[in-house]
Length: 108
Length: 234
Image: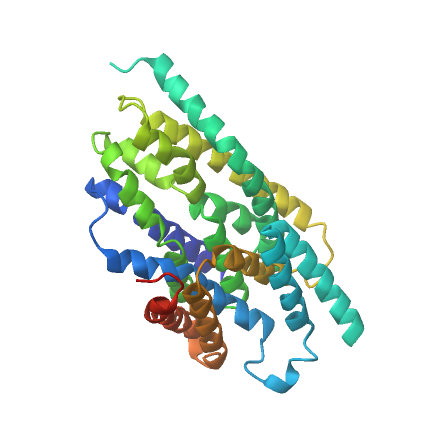
């Protein structure tokens, strides 16, 4: 992407984000009685996060035989356990990176 | 005529309410600065995204998709989906800002983040309905904004000193893993994430990273459909 394209994309992202935040403030309304919208929103974070994480761990796609030799897979298991135990983003990143370096050295 | 002293009191109250939240935001800004560089963004773009987009998770998504050479339209759509929850905050505070001039509405909408909302909604909803109470939200939002800009800048300076070959790009995935685990409260949340992850892998062959949006849609649909099997679900 060119510098101009990067700037334009970033500005568009900023505009979309701003318009979302401005939406109801501009209208001066309270939350509309739409349980369907809230229900939909509830599952957006886990769905988008799951969709973002998976290709980072398996860049080659769903090839099951490659799992034992993939250091990112083992680091992910450690990160999931540490995240569940500590509820800390920083601890998860630290443990996950250490596990990745360890697995890379072990599997190399 | 609003007295300037009560504006000041409200503003400082907002600053004080926001300060504890900065404990979590500053490390996140540092990490974003470092991993924005690791994902392939130039340093100026990492810093600029903090004021132009001003939304932590969505900025990480922006950096990651840029590094993966996704087309601009897919990046903008994904950032929009990630930030869609802010519409709920907008709706929740709209009634309290109704009488304000447009310049205030524009400013407070720009500053409306997870943390500013969390720090400000209690004052707006439960505090006295004075003509200066929006200064509280302004104080909270401005404090978060300043903390985010400075910590991102510091992260870029630190990140530039970190050698390549440390696989630091994986810290993006680790951040997402932590946010995911913290956000999963019911079984249907986990099923939504798993369904989206599986779809994302199966759809890797789709052009322009469109598999990402497809996977998010499948994940949301699975969550909505499976919520009836949650413990205590009606």
